[in-house]
Image (tube, rainbow, N blue to C red; front, side, top):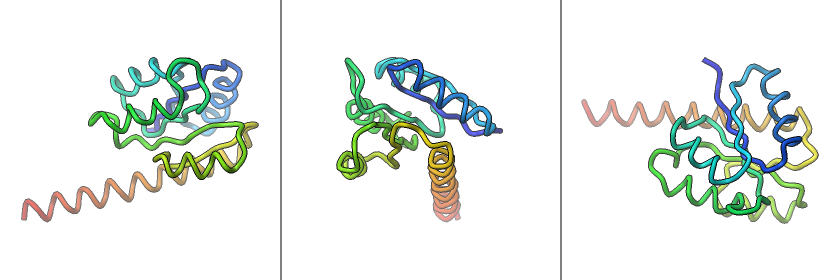
Length: 138
């Protein structure tokens, strides 16, 4: 089954560009046009990855990440910050708890490499968790 990716961004053009690039690469993509909708979608059907715009009205990307991490249902979703800000924001986003950082304008290669890296980390974490559970049962 293809990996699922949730795009949370208030600009339709950004969502469409990301959706097209990701769907062409075989991913299942869903979209939310604000932070609150993105959180609700993540809670009802947790994606493998969430691409979260940092600058949105209402709940911004920082607040979205905080809510996702605070909820047991969504805390393990890999989250990438998406922003047009320079590299100073990259360090802040990673320190805040984002798993990756993507800059606008989007570069297809960077996007797909980031997604693959996040999915690889998820597979390793899942394997480690399963191994720990088997050891506890033994």
